[in-house]
Length: 233
Image (cartoon, rainbow, N blue to C red; front, side, top):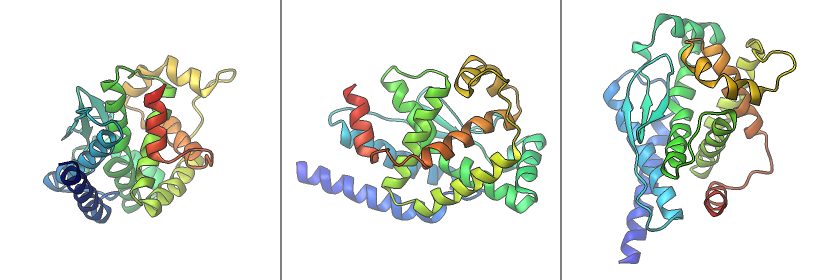
């Protein structure tokens, strides 16, 4: 029975990774395709966590729900946005940071039909453990898990593309942190207001800045070790 479970888990991992690597990290115009591919990513993420913590029936859902928050987690569900449903103001922000429509849509695909799904699934992991809160550290944790998880499954070129893109975005994004405050204190204290403001530039400054810092951190372990260490604390 154990061998059967292992083989099934291995098959799921290989099948999901092979399919998703061809279709993820790019703009999805079709809602059915988006949710199908998001479900593959989610199933693989959940399987990885459950293999690290045997006997733990961790589960999550994915759905499409487009709001100014773009991607977010609540009630054991990761919500993903569809580009065509975004408010014009937010689409224009992507065009601005991308400098043209094609590059703006590519940025959206890289991060919001790409990187940030495991980020939100990481929030679900925290929530299941009763450790979810809204803070700078909470977001840093989720970004770390997402980067390590994508590395585990070989998305190295996609992560590098996100990294180079994040640096370009940060060079164009004004620092919203007032003089005399740290980024951690500012974003933690004003988290809900920033998230609900509808201004992607301010929240993006935190998220893309964190991505760059984590990506460059050479001290981080692999995904499995990181999760095991977190669960043991």
